[in-house]
Length: 303
Image 1: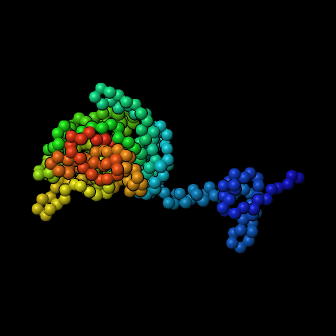
Image 2 (image 1 turned 180 degrees about the vertical axis):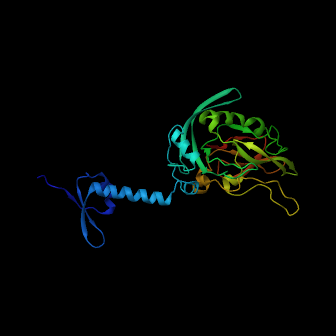
Image 3 (image 1 turned 180 degrees about the horizontal axis):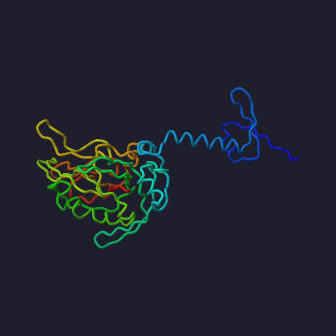
């Protein structure tokens, strides 16, 4: 009969236990007595424990998955199985900070650039039940790690017409929309209803309207959780800051460093008669004149 290897390890030696042969034996103290179990059985018990814990802590729903930052690569495309779990609202094996790295072709002004972009999960079901027409589809909100290109909000330093009246909304966002729809497939980009500004009076948003939205610049609330620079009510003047995006994206709440990517990039909030909000490369919440050419880093949802 061959000798049986008996191994005595401390939990600090967990790595070496997991690397040990399944046929080996471990001496385990259960608080009362010392018992002998095989390494293989110990590994299975450990796997079962982890499975039970993850099942209880991270149920397959938006609420649980919005609360966990993981940051794992999910590959170079969204798989059919992943889309199926998104549609079902279970979001299996997807967590905040996870990302797909997808080769993205962007054409701006006749010049095409192709590069790999990390598209990172920012929220689950963020827009669910919102809109003048209710959003009912389960979805994942995506934010690219980097700006896709630089563009102006307007050709002059004016915010007349708000975000909906800007050159960014009417033309300069189009290359991003085309690139993202090609990268993910247009049928998987969720169209939903949001409230956007369309009028400015004395430097504050004075009007707005419900609109269909698929790929949009983010607003201050999505990034910071509040309106840092957006004008607020004076008691007599109430800005038209109505929005369904009224809470911070979990991506930025759980990992604030994801806000700052060392680029200056636009937000869509009207700040003054001349400026829109933006995020500076230094990490500052800020604003800039509308004619500045800043980064286009839009958010969108897949379903």
